[in-house]
Amino acid sequence: EEPGDATATPRVTGMGAFRRLLAATTSANLADGLLTVAVPWLASAITRDPVQIALVTAATRLPWLLFSLPVGAITDRFDRRRLVALADIARAGLLLGFALLLVLVGGTGSSTAGSPSTGTVDASHPGALLAGLYALALLVGFAEVVGDNSAQTLIPSIVPRDRLATANGRLWAAETVANLFVGPPLAGLLIGVGIALPFFVGAGGFAIAAAVVFTIAGSFRPPRPDGPPTRLSTEIAEGFRWLMRHRLLRSLAISLGVLNAASSLGAAVFVLFGQEVAGLDATAFGLLMTGSAVGAVIGSFLAPWLTRRLAPGTALAVAVVAMGAGEIAFGLLSAFAWLWAVTLVIAIFIVVWNVITVSLRQSLIPDRLLGRVNSVYRFFGWGTIAVGTVLGGVLVWAAEPAVGREWALRLPFLLSGLLHFALLAWAWPRINNEQIARAAAQAS
Image (tube, rainbow, N blue to C red; front, side, top):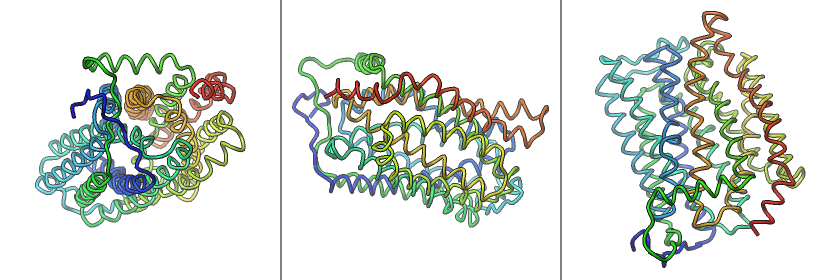
């Protein structure tokens, strides 16, 4: 069948297919979790420049700004299951290639840096290694855009609508356990053996994910309208217009963009904060992220209960307040135990926000437009991560002469918290229980 075949329709295959998608997602996110420590740790072993390290992190998110719009139209043309699998295959190949490059260039040593600059990357060509790291981050980011957008639009074709919130909660739990609870500590241990090892293991994780996704039976190409094929730009514009006309989802997309930009200020220099302010080695740095994993699991179970108890709009407002307070607290603390506890609280309410808003999108957006509108939503919501990450690195660089290195590294977290509270004042009139109920009534 060609992409424009109007007879191709998604097939709902039941919870067995969902369990396979869940297993594949877990494996892929384990690989992602390894990269969340391995990539910045390797960058910090090559350079101590906060702007350079921020640019490595930004490279993984830049594709959301550059590529998310056309990917949405692509996921509304092709089989979404195959797109997920192909994205995993691409990431497996990229990680395997970079791991081999790292061995050849000279990154086989262990990194047990309590003093981070001693991360033993004995590279004969550090400039080439840094350039390769930029390229890896960027290309993996492009594959992530394809895989994530396709997977999110695939779920409603597998899971009945009345079980979307539960399914999304389980996915968030699995993703965050693998991404934050298992992946980062494992990466810290693997780095202690050899800095290239997390990249080899990550390649295997993505390869397993692709193999499992290919076992899901059925056709998941969305229905296409009758008539001649339309241009990609026309379909992108249709998704853009639909989101811009939907007051609730438009406001949620803008809010997500601000939240992600604010959070990225600190994420840009998180590895330097952990090393220089908290004094963490690679293993402890990975363990710090387990607080987010525990919080995410709690949040995945808390979100449906909180939504029923407070109603979705109120739960979203509580989530913004909690995340903002957590960012400020993180910027003021240094002890591992307190930092771990704060990351737990922040993660709880990140997942509360995600479960509620993803379920809203999946229930409010028509299936034939789901890929395109999701991609436009993520263009606004995730494209700002690259911008915020770069600004975080520049902020530290600019503030250091005036306030010193330690407070320069704390400043992005403090500013992030303040931006959360400023956003709430704008968002509440547009994202509240009345607006959500009205949008649900219109969709039904």
